[in-house]
Length: 242
Image (cartoon, rainbow, N blue to C red; front, side):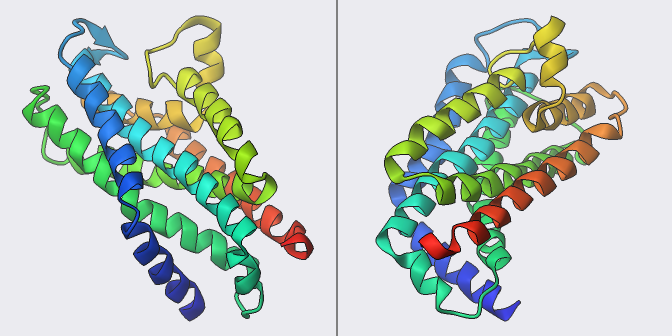
């Protein structure tokens, strides 16, 4: 545990120096909410558009930031030999995965908070006091799913292959999950199996005063377990090539 925490602190310090990552992670969902959040009228998933889009853009910023930036960095670290150096330490394979997920949780929390504040003070979204932390924590926890997936992709693919892979995967998860726009029909039913949909729907159900199905939070935990297992397997199976 001590080794994992030391690695976490080192990774966090390195990431805090990467200003471009923070700008992209935080700025993109903020700009989209400013452009679309109040301009579209109507409802989505039973709540007004401004509230839905607040949840959607907070999810987008947290999940995309966890996946795209992390996967690229991990792949570059592997190529540069940083991971080879870690192999010389007694750290277990899952320590690297845990450290990356924890760092991602710290950084993506900023994006979630800013978008929720925009929803309140720009989008005029009014919620009960307890609803704000429930929505924020749900999205924040959900981002760890894509942080784990980023480790698996970063280990498996070369730096020049990572970007198209992550963009394709996130595009599928974003569209099917109802982040860009709500879905119904066949695609909507397929999307209900995605972690993006589960995170968005928990938030919209809380806002709409609807009882949240127990399967949604369980689904997020299951997806985290799947991607964490894939990440750990990728770390272990590529050990001799790193």
